Amino acid sequence: MHSLLTSFAGALFLASTSLVSAAPALQRRDPTWLPAQGGCWSDNTNGQRALDKNLGGFDDLTPAKCQSLCDAQGFNLAGVEFGRECFCGNTVFGNNRPTSASVCSITCSGDVGQTCGGPNGIYIYVKNSYPFTVGPASVLDAYNGYQNPSCWQDSVNNRIFSGRPSTDIPADQMTVQKCIDGCAAAGFSAAGLEFGRECFCGNASTPPAESAPQNECDMPCLGDASRYCGGSNRLLTYHKPANNVPQPNPGPASPAPPASSVPPVPATKTYKGVIQVLTADTNLVVGYLNKDTQVGISKYSLDPTNREQFTFTAPTGQTISRAEITAVDMIDGYPFLGLIEGYANSDSYIGPGNWQYLFVGGVSHSAPGATPQTGANSYFISARQYESAVWTINSATGDITPQWINPDGSKPTTYLMGWYGYIGFGSGDPAQTNAHFGHNDGTIKFKFIPNP
Image (cartoon, rainbow, N blue to C red; front, side, top):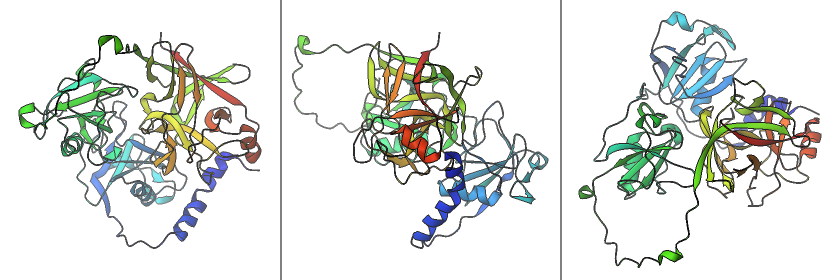
């Protein structure tokens, strides 16, 4: 028997080697990586990381290794820090700036002949002279005729704008300009940005929503740290005046239904608080979901200073299914608490008689009720399948239960497990998962505790 953590960390290079050997040869020119504006930058200035994607620590880190990992995930900037840490991104956030080379003088864990940053000093490399931007961020006043930037309260369960740009924009490349261009190409007169990474399109000059203070739309764009791209449940909108937008012939208007036939809209509420972790059989509180992770997997502890804040929106006092839970501080750069395919799995199926498992971690949006999608997530090997809208939440009691959807659309009973007493996992058969890895970890459950 072997441990789960050993299997997914120790098997990394074996799995990578087998995949490479099985794949057809690709003709690809190796990228050129050069120091970015001198190389050594301050990091964690005012609590803001220079690069947003943290790949974790490595005992064999070199600049080349970090560059390769970042390149594989589509990033244009790679940064090494404290001798063993690797970060990726496409823009430099906050007030982090080039600094003295002496700040980046710690030797690399994988090669003592090279240096890999320092304490709060990150040595950044840029790929193929990519024209990256630098924070701090501000609001872009207007672009391509779209103007009047405004901040609005939004909800994953009741979107202000439901349209999407003409082509998908990768989250880590999101900019205001790309979102507006995409919405304009799709025929929309309004564009909205959220979470620093999401783009929505619509046609309302004044959205049917509550306005929010402009300073709540304060997340820098993942593709341009010099501009804001909305916030947590906050949509930053731009609108093109009607006289600049071709108007299609709407045809005859449909008669409005009688007032008596219009069902009342249930009152909704956005809840904010922490997620408590309890043993499933005895209801013993064993911790709260933390702000930090273990290689991108959500952890829990009783430390009161390390509790992540979460939000969700639901009809007041009711139960909502296929809901998304938003991490206010994000989970290693990802906005939603979701489930991620386990590293040792052969696929993303779980269920009775099957030992395969799921990580609890940070993910991007996936459609409610849809099968898993493949993409980047908080787990340090990002090409895994994940789902975000997996939670059923009783807003009256705070009880949270997961529901994973298998690739064939089946919906196995999904259990939460506490691995090693501090890491969150999911399984379709806890006994089989424990037996496969030689553990005897019990099942846990989540409970939402609203802020006072």
